[in-house]
Amino acid sequence: MGARGWFWPAAIVSLLVSGAAANIGFMIVANRDQSFAVEPDYYRKAVDWDRRMAQEARNAELGWGATASLEPQRGGHARLVARITDREGRPLTGATVTVEAFASARANRMATVTLTPETTPGAYAATLDGARPGLWELRLRVVRGEQVFTRTLDQDLAAVR
Image 1 (cartoon, rainbow, N blue to C red):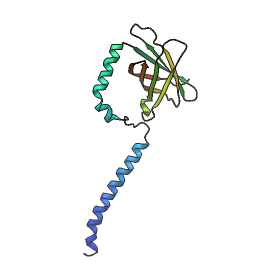
Image 2 (image 1 turned 180 degrees about the vertical axis):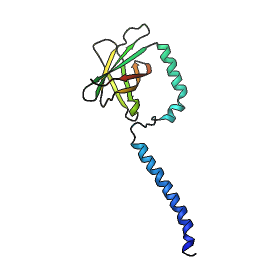
Image 3 (image 1 turned 60 degrees about the horizontal axis):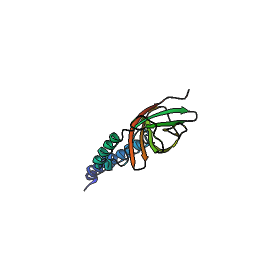
């Protein structure tokens, strides 16, 4: 093969290498973006769909209610207060409340906190670090004895004035 015979194999190899390099570059850029997130264990959640629907039925059977508020604080913090009530609307005490919280604009930065009981019956609170203004998703899990209640809430966090 002469000098001209190497042109086409070299061109094909260079196209393949440049395509692979471009894909690696796109992957690096996508993984640096804080607004991009993948749901953890999404496949397991899909497989456990029946279990999730059973939990939704237990939630309805319990009849508990949950509300939450996010109060901005200085220094990039927010105070998260959840109020849990029973079927009759009375404050639910003696529960363990955990929350997975993340700002929709930065969904890859999920915080998991355990809320502590407040002096107000049925109120549980914690401080979120690195809280930025915007829409937040709060995934509550309330456990009291053998009873488990879950609820997902959306809450807006205002900017500190």
